[in-house]
Image 1 (tube, rainbow, N blue to C red):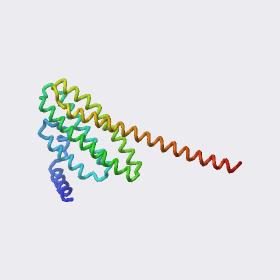
Image 2: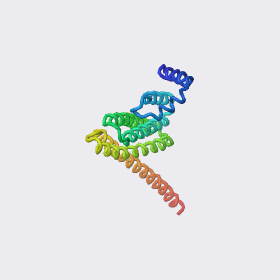
Image 3: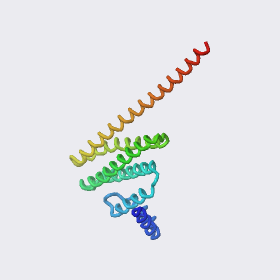
Image 4: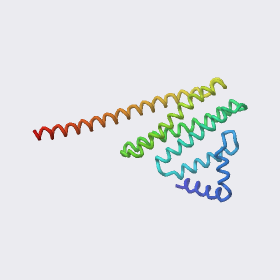
Length: 199
């Protein structure tokens, strides 16, 4: 709680001193820019202020997409060094792991609670996450053509996560189909028994 209050106080001070412009400029910064650390700070403030668990997963996915855009911008720049590309890749990888862990944690919690509305929202985030992984596997291959061997371990991790999530999605679909069939069979059995009673 003290951490949250400290972050809130910092936001008040920063916003009072023209922090909106600073946060806007920082948000556009990439890992090679001096304002990037300010961007990371504001993201921590957002995390502290996001109390809804599903919204917190959506926030992590949004931050991941920002890291992805920053990485792609640095990779696409002609004058980017291997070190700059690796730094951007590492920041994106840290956020990817954070998003993956948060998504899994909250999905499990919502499944235990039987919260279907939250589960649907989390499925959307999972689909966005899978799209991110597919794009980044391709982008990492592109980086490896530019700088040999860069991001090989990260690429393997992403491929494993992609397979895990796709298998999980298939299992979920199969469970839903089984539940629907059981419901249909139960309804059919009820109508048959009522039909027998009428004869």
